[in-house]
Length: 273
Image (cartoon, rainbow, N blue to C red; front, side, top):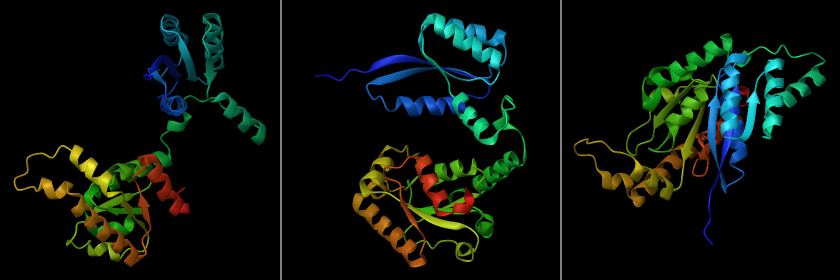
């Protein structure tokens, strides 16, 4: 019997950027493989004038409504109108804030966009991003000791996106490619501060990703060797032996998302949490 995908409308209303809602909505949707959401994202909804057209759009294309609105009057209006339309709606943050209020014995300030305030943590993330971009793919090897994390691995093990994800959490991250016959920068071995971690994957996975990569037109580039499974197996063997020799932990990224790889790295260095 043919498997058919059912589509449904998912309305995400936020008084901030909507990132929290998008993550929550997609995490929940992923548990229902036979149904695919059609996302409608409404960010920066902060007054009644901005909210009314959103409610009209929901009425025209009914579906599940998730929202993160801290203004009580606007939240009540969403609840009331959704009841009238007969559509389910959930205030995603309210149950969490209630737990915080009960445990802390204090009321929420209900400040819009509080998580995006330009404080010291914000500028630390900017600094980490700048550092990470400057130290991508083996660049600027003289100051690796200023990094929190140094990621090493052969081509197509997701070093760069993992580094950027960590940087967005304020973690200064450098990444270095492992190439057989090419020594790693001397500065790496002199470091005392950063966690050095190797990323690997299965031979098949690396070959598949490399084959799907758009390779440009660099003269003399050996595409056959780049995707050859035997050659990749040797690269991985060399990378594993290198990490073993220096007692650097290894993470297999074959079945991991970027987020999961980053979480595994943070778990190896508790003070980065």
